[in-house]
Length: 568
Image (cartoon, rainbow, N blue to C red; front, side, top):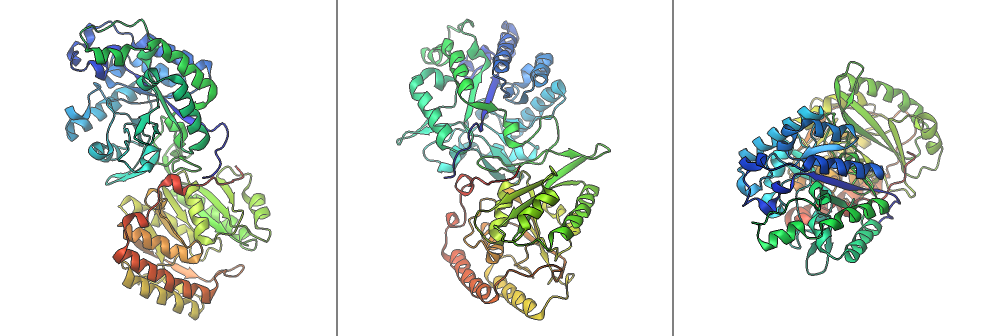
């Protein structure tokens, strides 16, 4: 595991609901009677805001839609004081009381109420009751379909795969969404919730303090901490009709909560979920990944000079001894930037220097180091072109990620034509000079022979029938490929990445393109070694196809990510 950066951000969420709206009393108090109670949520929410101001901390406030309709001024105040406002559902109903269509209507109604109050887009959701991955995952499809970027509703249990304990990206039939589950401690016999609320009040604090400290030191993903605003109100009225269990659950050690919160705000750095993801509440944005470890997928929608919303994309360029190509590339990328913006995209360029031995690192910094739209990542050892591409993909903050060579043997202006295929359901778009509408110019015949021969063999191994399998010029849906486990990190890894996505069932399309001979420098490919490598890779892919298991071609995001040094 990579080292944990000091002072990294954890997640703080605040649940805005009143004492009579909680799950412990749902069988006693009907929604139609809520207006009969003297509300306390406003004063408690303001108390929470003041507490967070003391520690200069920002949080995500999950708000009931009912409260947003009753008191839009309070919800606006939360946003104006620098916090994110997200959805808690309209009436604090558990999923067992909602059909899928009712859930969708509840979500949209809540979002309208919050957005009307704040003027900001709602990005995330948290269910009224803790959800189970095995039974309740259907809501993720609806959340993704309705444009939500994250969810924070699921409580993992010991039967779940270990990666479900941590923030991760989940691909649904309607797109990807980020999940921030309740933080838990693996006790060896089960998972103990340690993320906040009732658990922090009931469990001995010395035990919880140690568990949170251990998470901060050893776990790369953010710790998810939460509290309800009514937990700052020990003097709240008691619902005597509640069962003894529910009275213990709701009222016990309420006076403890404020000092527990204060202690954690002193010890750790917290922020909102949207901030951890790199999103900005109030703007329309592309879905992302998070920095869950060293990298995550997501960036804000940007705007052009006329105020038109632009979709962010990342362009990854592996570099190894490319000092001759970089000046040409710099001018080319200016045109790429203009072209993409004209088509509704804003590019973020990521250079991955693969331990170059020439002046490539110096030139990268001279040409691009001062531009905030460029990121330069350096490998301490040479990993190869596919390894560099994967590093760039992991570092990307956007769902749309492109890869291209520094030598521009494919016209990078074609990216604006390739990206829209992702919007039609593709997971990968690969350039294809051997497509009937593609072509080659001035490329040596021996290279074409080898490349076409490899494509012939891959076509007989993989389910997706393409004309070209080895092109580095591609567009990816980041969530579909970031956790693929490639063994080959050189040129062979480019074909392996496509092959593993094919076996996972990803949709791959090819785009006809023109392949030209590189203008500067020379190819780094070792011909004989590459030929032998393709044969070995084909053999392994055949074995995986007919005898392998799904987990042999996947790796969880926490295992995949590593700390990546950058110059920014």
